[in-house]
Image 1 (cartoon, rainbow, N blue to C red):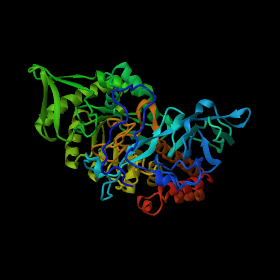
Image 2 (cartoon, helix red, strand yellow; image 1 turned 135 degrees about the vertical axis):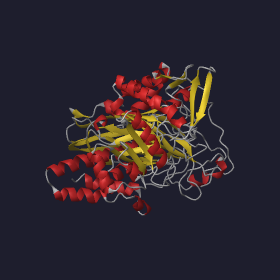
Image 3 (cartoon, one colour; image 1 turned 180 degrees about the vertical axis):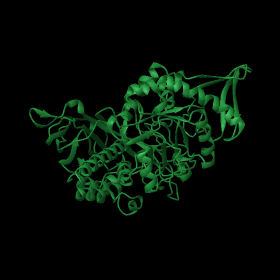
Image 4 (cartoon, rainbow, N blue to C red; image 1 turned 120 degrees about the vertical axis):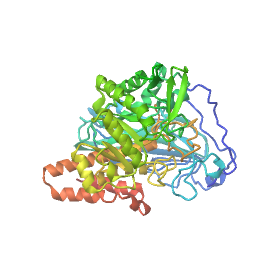
Length: 580
C-alpha cells in the first residue's frame, strides 16, 4: 500500500532530546487510516507464536494463524530465536514479557542470564527501485517511494505500550550453554496482563556442540563506523564516553563472530556516501623540509579498543584508492590542511603513499599487528589495483592486500582476502587453491541485489540465507559494507538519501540488535554446523552422509529464490540437517 506518496516525515521526537534514554517514540502515520483493515478482524485480542521469519507492519493486522506452543531444535552452544506476536483492537497499556525456568527438570535448566526477552520496535522503511533491480542511486525525495512502518528493532526492554489497532512482536533469544545436557527443555513466555495466557515452548537440544563465536571459522566482515556513534550521541570523538557508548554495539558484532577491525587510513575513503563520513585515523604531516611524519595514536586506540571487545583476528586498512583520488594532509609550511590529487601509477601517487607504507609497516610490526593487517580496497578497477599492489609490495613484500569488488583472475594470487559480489563466482580450482594457501574468499551484497538482501523491508530469512549459500559454494564468509553507519535518526527512520532503507546498518543505538542481525547470525551458525558435520563425515569416510549434506546445500542457489523463498528453503534444510 502506498502510504506516503504525499507525506513528508516529521519526526516524533526531538533529535536533541535525551539521547541516552532507553525510551523513544516510534513514528506514526497520522494521515493514514487503517480502520477498514481492522474492521475485518474478528477477535479483539489475538496472540501466539509465529515464525521468526515474519516481518510485521505496525498497523496492518496479520493474516498468520499463531501457534499456542512452539517447538524447535538446537545444538549446544547455539542461540535460538523465537517470535511471539500480539495484535489487538483495544488498548492494552504497557505489556511486559518474561521468560524464566527454561528447564528439563528442577536441577537442569538454562541460566537466566542466557535468556533475552525484547519488545520489537517499528521503523520507517521504503522499497526497491521502481525497476525492482535493487536500490542503488540517490533517493532524496520520500514521495517517490512507498513507505511503511515495519518491525526490525530488537529493543533493550521487554516491555512496550500497545494501543488499539496495533501489532506488537516480542523476541525471545535463548543461548544454549555449551555444557548443557542434551534433552528437551520446556519454558513459557508470560505477560503482565491476565488476558494474555502463557505461551509454552520446547527446545530439543541435540548432543552436538557449536563452538563459541570467537572460534567460528566463518569470516564475517561487517564494516564498523565509530564516527556515527559519536555524532548520534553528541559526544567527543574517541572520548571515553564515546568508547563506552560503542561497547554494547560492538559486543553484538563480537558475539556474531566478527573477525575484522575496520580502520580508515585516509580522509573520506568512500567520499561521503554515508550520513557520517569516515575521517582518517592517521594524521599525516608534511614537515618544513618536505619529509613526512605520521601520528597513529587514534588508529592504535581504536584497534586496541576493538580487541578489548573481542574482535582481534584481522585489521583492514582503507584505502589507497579512494573514489575521487583526493588525499588530505597537514602542511607545516602553510600551517593548514591541504589536498592533493593523484592517480595510481603516477609519481605523485607513489610519493604520497610509499613513505607512509614503509613507516606504517614499521609501526605495525612494533605493535605486533603486521601479520594480521591488510591494506584494503573497495570496488576499484583491476588496472588501478595492479599498480597499487606493486607499490604496496615495494614498501614491504610481506604486506597482505584485500579487495571487495569484481572477480579478476589476474588479481587472485596477489590478494589475501578477496570478496566478490554474490552473483559472481570463484572458479572451483581457484577457490581450492586459495583455501590451500590459507587465503580468504568471501561474498558480499550491497544496494545492487534486489534479493537476497538485508534492507529493513527484505524478508528476514534472506539475511540467514547468506550463510547457507556460503556453505554450499565453499566460501569462507560474508562481507557487508556497513554495520553501524547510522542515518540521522535510525531508531525512527531507516531511509537514506542513497540506497535502500537499512542498507547502511545492521544494528541500532545503545546495543539494540535487529531482526536482520539475528537472522544473519542464524545463517552463520548453520554454516558452522555444516562445517563441523562435513569434517566429521569426512574423517569417518561416511560418503552417504556427505552426499546427504551436499544435497541439502544444493538448494541454496541464487536463482532458486525466484521460486522458493529463503524461509522455506532454510526451514526445509534445517529439518534435514537435524537428522544427520
